[in-house]
View 1 (cartoon, rainbow, N blue to C red):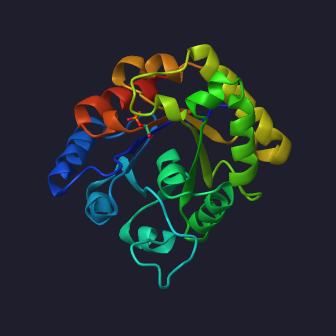
View 2: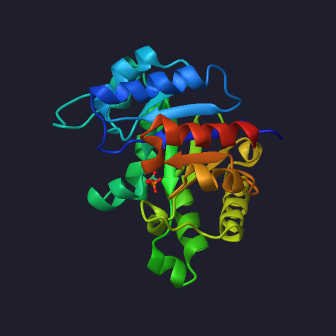
View 3: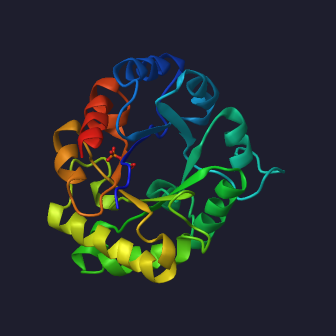
Length: 247
Ligand code: PGA
């Protein structure tokens, strides 16, 4: 079946008000692309970005599992939705590493996202040592089993495969390794989420650039990309949106 590709940007801890001009530039260049476009900026920019965005949908980078309460510095899915977000990244490897987030934490955050009406972009991916040890499929399989709630559907959930060693390094797995992992992920979720298996979108993430996006989008079961560094500038991200529109 034809799944609409998703070009998703993760600005991480980058972006002040002046960066909203990048969204204006994307809107001007892509009034109606043949793919979905999502940018996840720092939370401080969500409200203003959502007001500008038409093509560009806006997401959070993390959420707390609870709706509200005494959790200083955290943000809930409901607060993100109120600001105009339509999605939220959960379980990014930087959150798993910097904040010790477990698969169970990520699963609870994905359920919180749905509770607020947001799409959960659930991230998984192995470290370099795990790949070198031949454990990449096992590690990602375990993360999927632990992080993807039973109620996940193609409509409420997107899976992002991001090998930790490829993030921000310029290193990218071979196209064959990406295909192997994406085929594996769809088969794996096909066992646990039978009727939805063909509906899930699997993004590849890790050093995606305009120059390699088209070949990555052509890989079996790659339904888009989660892009860090190359999402910060409309000139770069535009090339990735263009590639996603063609593939
Ligand atoms: P990168 O980051 O594109 O800068 O490698 C990807 C990510 O962490 O989502």
